[in-house]
Image 1 (cartoon, one colour):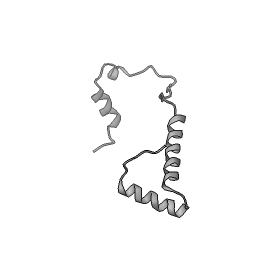
Image 2 (cartoon, rainbow, N blue to C red):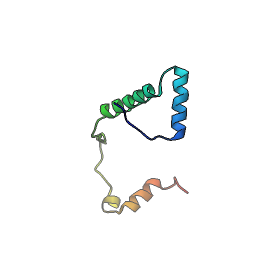
Image 3 (cartoon, one colour):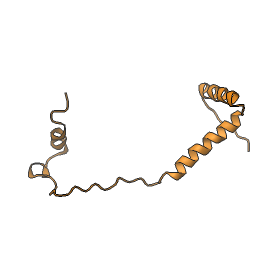
Image 4 (cartoon, rainbow, N blue to C red):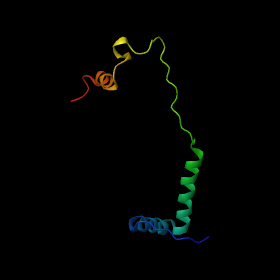
Amino acid sequence: MKTTIEISDDLFARTQEVARKEKTTFRSLTERGLRLVLEEKLTRSSKWRWKAVVVQGGEGLTDEFKRAPWKKIRDAIYQGHGT
């Protein structure tokens, strides 16, 4: 199938240079690149989720922070680590 794409001059020149060195074509490199990107996208989970972190022995937040605004919690976390 034929199609037209617009790419930056720099990317085109770099691809042409690699194609010459590898004795292949721009088309071949472009197809290979698209296959690599599609394979990466398709093998990655579509719904990435954080792993649950469970800490043993805790009762959650201390009374001081149970109803505290985020700013107070954040300030306590970074106390002594900033400017």
